[in-house]
Image 1 (cartoon, rainbow, N blue to C red):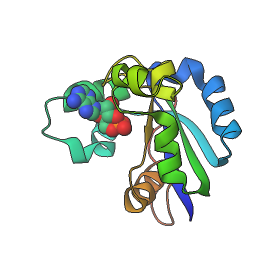
Image 2 (image 1 turned 30 degrees about the vertical axis):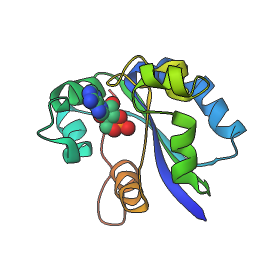
Image 3 (image 1 turned 180 degrees about the vertical axis):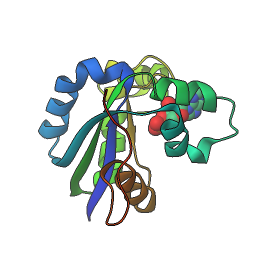
Length: 145
Ligand code: CMP
């Protein structure tokens, strides 16, 4: 099934952007859109609204607003699950045990600083892609200095 998903390289892995893009292309995804930006704290809070109230929300949104990120629209067969497969488990320490060749094993640190994000379903993918790339009548979010 042909799908689109949001792939995001987080501030901790921005320095590895070239290697991550290389892996994405070697894995057969099409990069359909790409943007580098820096989220404000309020924008990071809005992106992770679904996690508001969780104990890690403040740490997560501080981290996500701490530096440049790269947002990409990836397309391909089964793109949502394929990208999550390439990412490995959320916690980079777990990823190193269970999926040592994954992106989170290679470039992340722990369950907060975990290198990259991927949408988890078609509806959240559409919402997250609109957040970074806009849709008719609503501007995209996040600016570089
Ligand atoms: P991501 O795929 O961006 O989706 C939500 C993020 O919250 C997740 O990656 C992690 O960065 C972070 N996260 C999820 N669970 C925890 C946790 N238990 N402790 C700290 N951070 C977490």
